[in-house]
Image (cartoon, rainbow, N blue to C red; front, side, top):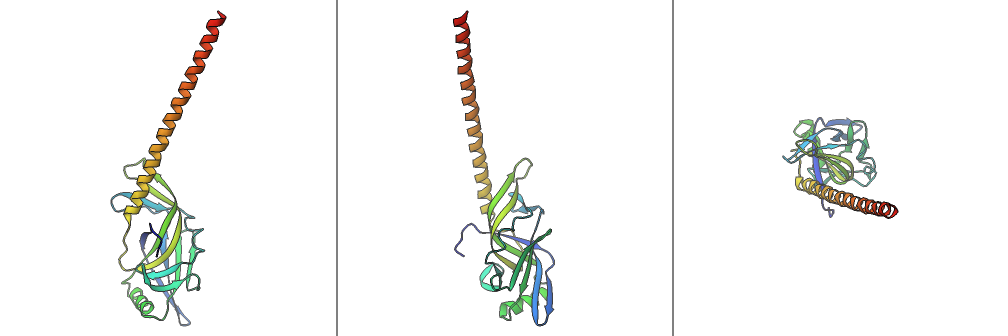
Length: 204
């Protein structure tokens, strides 16, 4: 992928497998809403409902372990189906009769693989630093891929940290702007008060 600032998040949970009329389908969730997760030891994160609503209509790939050379499904071809429900980002992958597809089917059947993940870029977020640990709420994303993963992990925390630092910088800038605005208002009120006192003195 040529896109930079791609983050990856994983969800450990049951990955269901179904075989019907020769079609082998994996079903699971790549993300679940409103679940706080610790990202490294830096901040907590949760995904807001609706975060994927504008992203799942794109041309998304299904991969094995985030490897772009191991494609096992694609939304454009209909072999990958994504939907957002009340739980999270639901994934259905019709596995191909390839080495990766066959291996993945076997590994999920044995429960050696029980995690799903997604690669994304945040387009809208909210930071809350009122508690001991900052909390990042992801409100909207650009989605690139979903993956079946052998070792679910929270990767690319440096991107989240940069986002937190940028948010803090914006907050500092906003505070400075607010202070400057209050100072200008005070100065204007002081000048207005001086004018009123001058008028009173002239009238007396």
